[in-house]
Image (tube, rainbow, N blue to C red; front, side, top):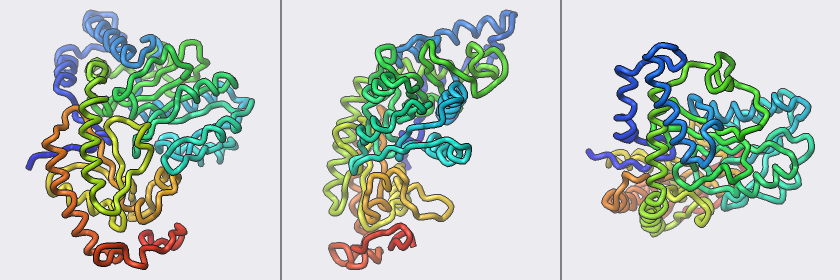
Length: 404
């Protein structure tokens, strides 16, 4: 059975060119770049070249890049560096729809005595900029807002936020894990202070990430150890993966026009076809979002059931409902947007890449409507050709028809 992979916001296939670039460093070129002998020396130049390729994609200086193990480490490094570098400041600004790498730090920070303001979004996932402006104070150590949402693809006005923070003397960090390689960037022309990324979102392997730190920014290391990364992140450099990320960055820069034309057109074709299914809605701002992402809710059924049936046809997608440990709570992102419970539980995220084809889109559009019809026929919240009366009750989160 052929795999049709529409889950590229979760992770991506390692590009064959990336694998080929890495392979020599997993075999013969195994030296430690800190070593003085020739085996160390032969990997030093490839490391410099890889750093430059990533800098070219980001539009920054190579010296402003710190390699990490993943996007989560990059986010935590940015957050805790800003707090440690400014111990007199006890306030953090973020949004209600951030990735868990930031979102799950909020309760910890509050226990440690920090004030955290979570800025809300509207029903389209757009940030409340006026609330953000009013929330910036002389006590604010860091404002951290993602560049693009991982579930809906909605893009925040990062340059505007960075400017507001700069004017108030507040350090600004953006989690750009979903945005890097999908939309153009020029950090040298922006007022972004720190930016996180993860290699496995742009066809590099898992286990490599990076943090951009603007030159001159006061910085406190999160991983303390040796002299690596100019003393900003200890630990022997992961040479094969750094080289792989460099190659992936080179390919991503070359493919940006395709990402924002052909991939966008495929996403739109898939989305428009799925919206022909009754009681389906797009979650998020359809104008300001990533070119590869759509999040669609199919009301009165469970997203996980849709995924199970899609998988039987070889189609891989993900649910926006983020159910774990038997909980049927919809994702915090959809809750923050005020998506009705009848829609939030039936949300599906489809995220494409340059490898996807029109044939894959059309195959999925053929299989999808019968799946939804079958599941609705089995649903206690569906009767004949529309929602049952019980499904029209309002969810109060404590006594939800679907949450239990």
